[in-house]
Length: 353
Image (cartoon, rainbow, N blue to C red; front, side, top):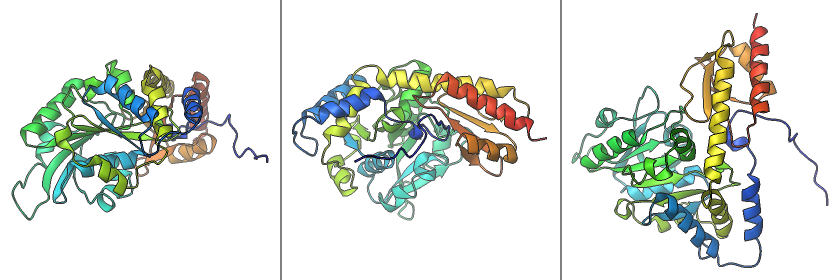
C-alpha cells in the first residue's frame, strides 16, 4: 500500500511551535521503545527511566505522571490541587483561561479567578486582587496561583520573580501551579536550569511541555510538593489522560531530558525568534509590540498586508481589532526560514501603498 504525500515538506509556517514535526532523536526513541512487549499503564522500564530523567532536573522528590496533551496536564494538575469549592488565580491571558475551550471549568470543575496583566505576568500585588473572600461561603475559595513560563505573551518570569510569587502565595496559604508548556524556552533564554524556575523557586506542581519541544505527543504533570496535590493517579484516569501504552510517551521524554536535547531545541527556537524580531523591526509600517524574550514575536501591521502574508506563511492574528499578529518559531525553524519570511514581510508591506 502506498500513501500520497498530502503536504509540501518544504512549506514553513510561523503559526505555532506545534506545527513543527518530531525531532529525529525522539523518533528514534519511539522506534526503540517499539521493540518487544512491556507492561501497560506506566509499569514499564521506559516510564521508570523517564521518572529518573525528570528527577535529575527537578529534584529527587519529583513525582511524574505522563499525559496526552497540555490541556490535560493543566486540568489534571489543578484538579488534584483543588477541592470542588476552591479556585485558581491566574492571568487573564493565561492559556488555562483563553485557549483550553473551557476544559478547566467543564472537565475540571474549576473556578478561574482571572487578573488583567500588562504583560502576561502575575505579581504579588496582582494576586492580592483575587486572593479575597477567605471563609466566605458565597465565594469560591482561592487555593492555587497558576503562572505560565514563558507566558502567552512571550514574557518570562526570572527565578527571583517566581520565588517572590511562591513566597507570597504560600504566605496566603495558597499553592503554586506552573504551566510550563514552554518552560524549556524560558530556562534557555535565562541560561538557568529548569529547577531554578520551578523546584528551587518554590513551585508546588507544574505541567511540563513536550510537544512544543519536539515530541510527537505528550506532556507531564510533575508534583514537586506531594502535600499540594492529592490523587493525581486517579484524576489522570478520570480525566482520560492515562495512556495504556505509556512507554511511547515516556521514551520521548527520556530522549528529551536524558541529555541536552531540550536545551538545544529551546535555544534554536529562541534564537530564530530573536533573528526574526531584528529582521522585521526596521520594516516600514511594522511595529514589534512586545519584547522578544522566548520563541515568539508579536507585531502590528496593516490588515491587508497581514492577510496577504498569511497566505504565504501561516500565522495567527492575535488581536484582530489591534491588528496584532503572533509569529512563533520552533526547534526546526532555520535561518533561511526566518530570512525568507522577513523578506516576505518587507515585500508585502511595500505593497500596502
